[in-house]
Length: 622
Picture (cartoon, rainbow, N blue to C red):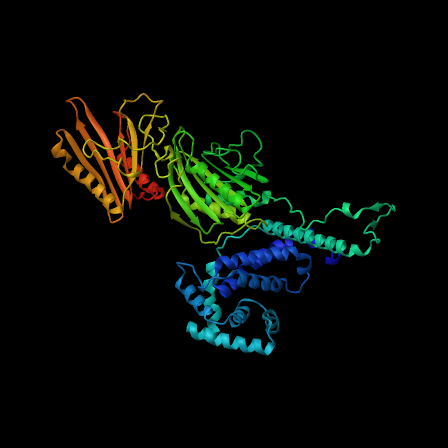
């Protein structure tokens, strides 16, 4: 059947566009990256250009060279998006790629574009000159100058220009792309928006010109001859009613994407729904059905590998919000679910900020100690008005890993970011930074139940008392008797396991306080000095220093103490003290016979206490 045989054949059959998108996107990314030296802007520009191309696909597909039409828009979008003063900002670039980009950056923009079109496209000189808006003779002169100048800067013969561009091509070939269905949906939404605006403009024009068809009294005639009073006329809408925000199933992860980043074979989608059934709590630590109760759309998709007894499951939940501000609140709420996990015996292990994924993103790992024990890694991210979380849970000792989970989160944002209400897309170079845990307690700098490891032989949860002013300090040992009551921001909290039958002395206490930095350092030094001399001063007390680190702004010390009360009774005590600038925390733990925690576990807990001091306010003056 000929192209003319269908009225809207190109729109009804997207296969042609999908193949075009697959064939052309990397070439355009290479061209725009070399043109701007800005990979994130180039990737976004190429995506936007394909969205516009689908919007006009009926027309573009009939052109002799559809790629040239899309290329012109990709270059234009890339140059508009690229606003950085520095030519390129990526770290860790291959030296060959960096040298090539540096040389390109020294060419004037027009010369650079002419050179790149000549080397990286099939455009003839006449087509090239039209694309850059120059007469043919000027374009030819610009090409000659650019070729000679680039070869000189790159220290190569002019015949080797394409060769030195090959490493740049290899650098961009691994870029993650949104699925063609996402691009087409964004293009269709763009077309609908343009249609609504066009109709609104036509209505406005009719309203304005309609004033000519009135009688002297200012009344419009009607078909029935009845009179409609001018005062009763409905006011025309100044703006079209916005379309409801759409969250299509095509914007969710696929089984193939999960298989790339999660262990397991033959992954399948087991369900996709709007999470209206049951209690809506589909993930560990989740406190509410929706992070944004007023959000207009939400989806949950679950995945399972094909195995008789699968030990790993993956889930994605996404939600749309009415505004970016509401989406930011949704992101914070979702993050709080996991950072302060309220599930019994859940322990937060690691917190990472993820750069290059959407507008904001974090990955957290937890261990759920209730049998059967499992490891959970969850990623939470936002792009514009959309928030998503990806969760992978593995039963047993294995761990899903932070890096694969961050990549899975990036894939999820890649699918969402082409929707009209979305924001930033992944840059393609996902990186993670270790950051302090998200504050979750009423006193942000103090430990929470989610920070505490399990103790041997007990399967009941820790319960913390309400934080109170540190008038006394149960975290101190008999050796140091550290007193925080004269400090500012002083607070103390004790953790117990009330459902377990343990000795009265069992428990863990943390005490916090702030002092000017010199006084804070002296306070910690005094505690260390007292612990160092304690074995000599207190008969029957043995002090072992397990960890020691001191610096101008940071101090960490951990001790294990044993005191022989009688010939048959010896009391054990773990104590750590940390300082971050002006903030001090002391952690003390008294085990009960065989119920305790390992040296590594207590050391890690003291490290968590130090990390939480990041949220401590400075000491109060006066």
